[in-house]
Structure formats: structure tokens, C-alpha cells
Length: 488
Image (cartoon, rainbow, N blue to C red):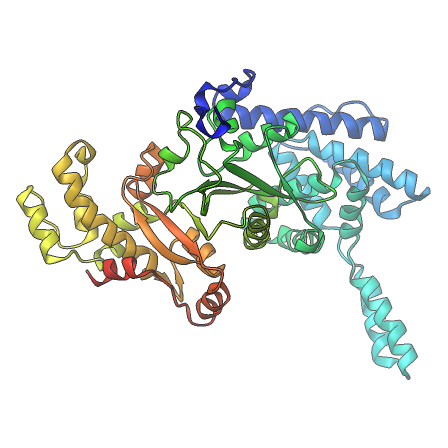
């Protein structure tokens, strides 16, 4: 009996762990353990005792004064590199011990370490008064040095510490939250954003395949970070890493234990139209000799602090190259994607734009429902268990699939589609290939998209042209099947 015919559920069970106790608990325990580990590491480096978490009221005036002194010491870098490293470790472990109010005060204090205006004015005057090229070049250097704020010097010192880059990523996540209504923090947020964009350029990232034999700590991270389809247990994870599955992630050399983004793939024969079938642990693994399609069914970004830095398009292209090399018989590369904003759109006035075909309205009327557009239809469904009514469900399939096609291809914010997942794949050069009824019957699937999922197809011969026409003109490329739905 080959591996491809063995039931997934019949394979050896993974060890019991926190992974069986719920996603929220897994994530919280995982983050808490890593935070405690980092604090202990930096306390040893700094040679200080543990800092208790501050009261919810935040830092006192005395504590703020002491903290300001620590920051001045980091800027001065007195005593050389070793001393600077100790100062940064002490400052960092202080930050890690603060509650949200204390962290906000910490960031506001750091934001005040801006350029010395007198030095900057002098450098600017020197440039304007320079009499020759050599003088101007020297004053350009002086201006660049004067513009570089002391707070940037503090930030860059953390990179020399264990997990220092990860610390800055998490600090940026904090800034994204608190800087929205505090203009004084915006400059610090922008400076840290610029540093991270430079450090996390895609050229520095490493693509790695994740397997069941990967370190347990990395597998635990997959469970905690999965954002599309919850990983319910170790058996579920093992299923997703089986012989007919692949998982790839981007890593940064300074964050080797932290995947920045990862993608889960199923190797199938033909397009997959149901996430329940795809993740069913009782189904046998597919015969790889017959697989002709790679289905990208989950892409999860893991670091809130790297929001705004795009890795997904590069990840998909790199993974396609890997799959083509390992499986030359693969002909199609597609997704089975959620439609996270569809129900919200149906509930809004925008849903009125998707009018129902006359024949569809007539079918619904026979079932006691009168609606001329998608919004009215959804309102009429409120309180009804339409999934349990076979006739109603069949009539709704025609109406909601057509409305969903309109939502994905025609509903716009300016030139771009309303749906965020559609924007991502269309910008990468994919086309809307097929809509799948009752493809995600989980509570989340019904809440977001009435159970509908979509296949985006990456036709390798058309990707660049699709990308260009989308970028320049906002053109959404669709299959003939979706085009027929739009004509309804």
C-alpha cells in the first residue's frame, strides 16, 4: 500500500500540546513565552534585574527622568561598542516590561530625540556658502549627518542584540497602533518604517520549505500565525504538510526562527472548489503522478510590524518556480481564496448596484421572497436558515454567485476592486477564474462571504500583461465563465 492511499486520519497522531486547546490560547501562550525569553536574554546582557511591569497609569515623573537618562546614554555611546550594547539591552528590557501606557510614554520620549536644529542650520548655511565643489560635497555630508536624528541612532543599536530586529518589528507594530491619533509620534513611525523597508528588502529574504520534520518551535509558529483557515490540531497541521502538500515561507537572516509570510499549497488534479474537502483529514493523499494543479489555499503574513511591506507577490512567484522545478507535470497554478468583504458589501447600499436577473427574481418569488437587487435579497434572508432549505439554497446559488462576480469584478474604490484579496491577486497578474458555492461552510466562511470562495488563476503566459493592464487601467481579467455571470 503506497502512501498516497493511506487515510490521513489513520497516520500516527502528533503529540498532544497547547495546539489542541484553541487558537487564541495558542497565540497568547506563544507570544508570552517569547516575550519572557527575550526579556531574560536582554537582562543577562545588560546585567540588570528583572523590571516589573509598570502600573496601568504608566510611568511616573521620576521614572521618565531615569528613562530619558538611559536614552541619552545610548545616544552618547560612551565607552565604545560593548558599553553601547549594554545600554541598548537595558533600554530594551525596560520597554519590554512596560504596560501599554508606559510603552506609549517611552515612544513619545524617544520621538523627542530629534535633530539638533542649530547644527542643521549651520550645515545648511555652510552648503549655501560653499565656494567650490569640494566644499559643497563636504557640506552635503554634514547635512546628512545633521538630519539623522539621535532617535535613529537609538533604534539601530537594537539590531546588535539577539532578536533585536524582531524587537524593532514589534515596536513598529506598537507605533502603528498609538501613532494614529498622536502626530508627535508620526515622525518616529515613519523613520522606523523606512529602516524596516530597507532591512526587509526582498533581496535579503530566504525562501524555505517547511515540513513535518521542521523544528517543533517553527511548527508551533505556523499554528499561532495561520490567519486564513485555523489549524485546529497537530493532526490538522500534519495533514497540511503531507506528501501532496507544500508549505513555503520567507525568512530574514536576522529573524531565522520567525517566518515573515507563509503559503500553504495542495497539489491536485484540476481546480479545488471546497476548502472542507481540501482540508479533510480522512481523505487519502493525492497521487502526485496525476497532479496537474497547484492550489494556493492560504497565505498568512505573520508580523504586524511589517504591515505595508509587501512580500506576497514575490513569495508566489518564487514558489511557482520551485514547484515547476520539482513537479514538471504541473500545468495550472491557482488559488482557493476567501472573499472577506462580500457579506459586508451586501449589507451596505452598494449591494443595490447588483441587480438580480428577471428569471432569478421569478424563482425567488415562488419561494416567497421578493428582491430586485443583492442588498434586498440579503435583507430578506435575515433570520432564515436558508442552508437547510434545498430549494431556496439552489435559487440563492444563482443569485449570490452572480452578485459575488459583480462584487469582485465591478465594485470599485477608484480604479481598484473593493475586495482586498482580489486587489492582491489581480495586482500580481491573476485572473478571476471561478466562483464556488458553499466552498467554505465554516461560521467564518458564512459570515464573510455566504460560504462562497473564488479561484484566481495564474496563467504564466499572461501574468505580466494582466499585471500591467490592471496597474495602468484598473482592468480586471476574468474567465469566460465569470463573464457569463456578469452578463446576467
